Image (cartoon, rainbow, N blue to C red; front, top):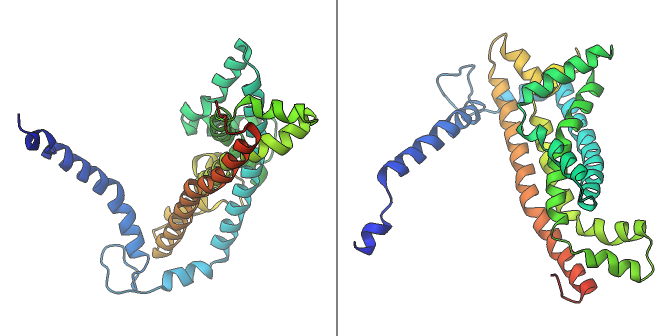
Length: 278
């Protein structure tokens, strides 16, 4: 069998791949395209205009929802980073069957359908007679996002040798000082990456927000859904395009920034361990 024949790409696989990505991204590209349409039409593009972006920035209800989504994402990110990092540090130091059981339970939100989590959160809050508001949305989002932070931080902890903390303890640091001055700085890449990822997920999240939000102000994804039920406006395309661009920037930052922090933290670990990272 010739080398050219072995290296030839299967035509069927290429066709299926192209069709898959076309099916996945063409609707998104259509939303971006029609957000610049100069007519109130979702079927024919007649000219370039930014009128629908101007309409969005002059819509007080949509702007209130945008601010609410940003606040929810910021608070949920801070809460999940705090609790997820504490959980990851605890699980990293517990090697009994209890630690493995807690670690398995921690991963459940990642494999459980989000609608199940949303319904469970709604039943929990209504069972406690808690009025649905932005606070209930934040609590639900934190509960759902802790798993992402824990998994990412534990992955970073696995690459940090225990000798680093032991060396700090030998030099006179207390356990808390060793954690604050050595371990946490080494976790900065994981914290930055997981924080940006959680912020993007929470900002775009619809299911949990839909089940746990109150009347007003509603998170932006819920507000968009409510507006679509009464007719699709090209202004919604503008909002979707802005959300898509913002989420894409966050994901790119989540991929690039940890690498920059990783270089400095790796240099610091090498200085502490004398270059021995085994």
